[in-house]
Length: 540
Image (cartoon, rainbow, N blue to C red; front, side):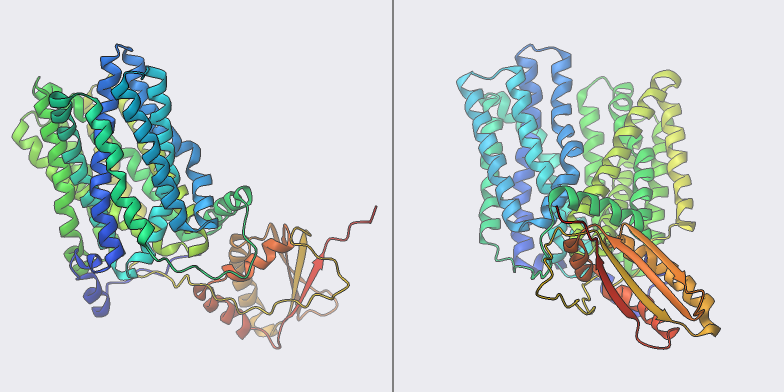
């Protein structure tokens, strides 16, 4: 699937994007979930602070303290792809509800063990991992349901509101945790975190989500995971967007990764780090409000590239500044640029991925995005260790600015294609005496075209573009052949692994693919002949 070419925004497009960042809040379910998520995320940040403080209090040593971060991050790398597959196979509302209940039960157990004094370093790590595993399974699905909760033109605003919510929670949670731990003990932070799940569970339980109708058989987790990787591989627009986001995050990660060292060099007080981090979060909130007016005036590519360039300039500025007030202003600007880029690319992924594979594509996006962050943090940390933090920030900032050149090759579209299903293919007639199970296969499909000789070259170019659609939707092999005895006859062949997978291909064809199919039909002299052949294995 390829994005449409990017043009200057039309008057209609400007009117749509000029909407207030608050417009998605008109949807009751989205509004209620956003409010509930604020409390839930505040509890999550409190739990992170409490876990780190508790590990120090248990005198477990620096390695165990560092492992708390590993226990929080590792599940996202282990479970992201299968979580995306489950999110596309199962009822998304039920999956979110299950993961929220799971995390609430784990949080209750953790709070009880801390209060009763039966907690140990390894038990704390195990329960932290269990909490993060629930979050890892929920995140692709939560992002996948966003297009169901708001209108397509409001996705950027909804993503920005999620950014505001997250940064508010990041600003409130750690400070509140510190105050409560100092006043009532570390167990209080875990109790508050356990209680923070109540709101989300209540809202999701009340959500009346319509059940999507499916005629094809449900997928299995392994097959669905393979289908996700295949979809990203053969969807040019989605693949380019994911790679570009990962490359940008590789360079952009240096700013946050090296910020503690920058703050320590400016001031020995931990207040300096808190101030700079708070300015970054406040900038993200301000950037969310700037995003919609900017999108109304400029193209998606212009706004996204400007955000990355400003973030790169901010990173370079941090490398040379040694004054806390000046650094605070730079971090404010950097936070705004950060949230604008993230909101735009996240919304685009949600728009470009059809419903049947959306959670899985978002899972791949998360893997590449987080992988770019993790790899970048490690690389720029090593550069800072050997060449100095200012040098690392300087080169990372210049690298971020250079990534804007990727827009010349992988330009972000202003409008996206209609990825709603368009199942218009004729279903094959199966004789009653043919024993055909869903797992029968492989299936060879042939399509015979009689082509106008004057347009044979255009036909072949269009067919080789069509190959990506066939492979994207489930074909393991594809070919186009010309009959030597009848030069006007061309035969397209493709193989699906099973009969069930071929039935799913019927549901995966989108309205955006219709234009290419119409072009192919314009070169054909009569209706193509389609045949389905099942592999014939000898009976035992």
